[in-house]
Length: 443
Image (cartoon, rainbow, N blue to C red; front, side, top):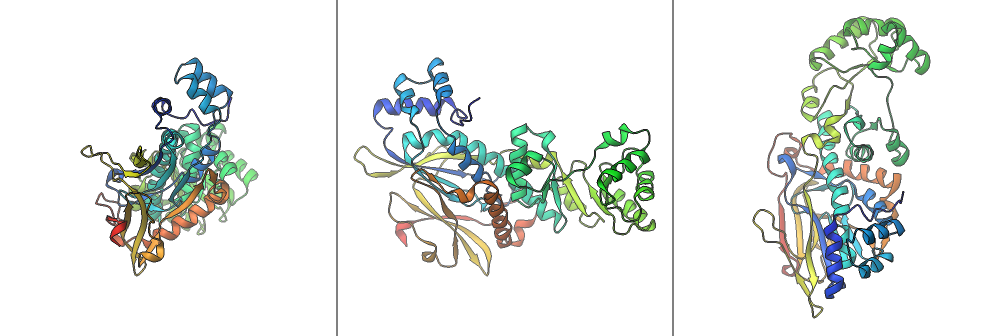
């Protein structure tokens, strides 16, 4: 099986390329922009995630023998376009928000510059990665905020497709989760992994006590025992009886969690296991985590909700042509005008205006053509949001691999501190800060 990512795309990307090669417009230089018109679910901010994954997939965006044979046999494009694709390699440039950055409606999250032939066929891949990962990261950030200092573990692999599960673990880690149950995510992205035993382990043994003794013999007394297979109160009693008061933790996966957690904490303390931690799971989302804020819970495990974007599995981002050369070589800003689905033409520079270290505005300057956009120093009280990710086809490796994940996580946790207090609420509302567009020529 080929490792190429070139056919992870919609057919019309290649039929447009085919037609553009025929009519001579394929070589026109263009600017495409990936952005979100609105924030899903009335959320107050979004989190950029997937950038490092996208760059890695871009390295493999090549049409090898298998891909070319398919295009030829299925008559997707003309023989001339098949020959063109034999040597395809993205040679343009990409600038964008750093992974882990916050975004708002209209934020130019990625800007792809190159010939039409270079850039148009990246649309589907870019959107599939950024829409999925940013949706997961946005949900994860809300959960992380709700959890406060209590650690979160991602454990939703069984609720997602196998490749999506690995991507979701990565996105959740960038947005504040501390570990994942997914071993491939640990191997590929360097994310700490966790996990001990499921209900099947207890049910395998003749008694709950035997299951606990065997787990402790294998993993030590610092392990976490799952105490709700049968009766929670009896499970806690057996756990301490078997492990002693130095038992590392117990996990609760059912019941009225605020009430059960309080009862388990009281029981552990009465048994002398005052240092035993309580982890809760059981279909948690950001609202359930917030409801547990006053409960004696030490850690959370989140599955379905985080890997599905907590009800919003896509970030709703789009990829639109915003500027191009005309027949004479001049630059023209272009935009879609459809009601409710419009776009803002022109190349853009993006800055976050701060007041006392708190974000107050997403400031976007627009250039009709290729006039110089402002540097950070030219926009007082602002932080520049865009970085060069690909330059003339050369990918910046700093955003890739485990080092890219570490950097994205650190960046996210830092910029999240800039959010105004109103952004931390979980209720539906307008974006936490407005996005303001201005003409670069007006400075």
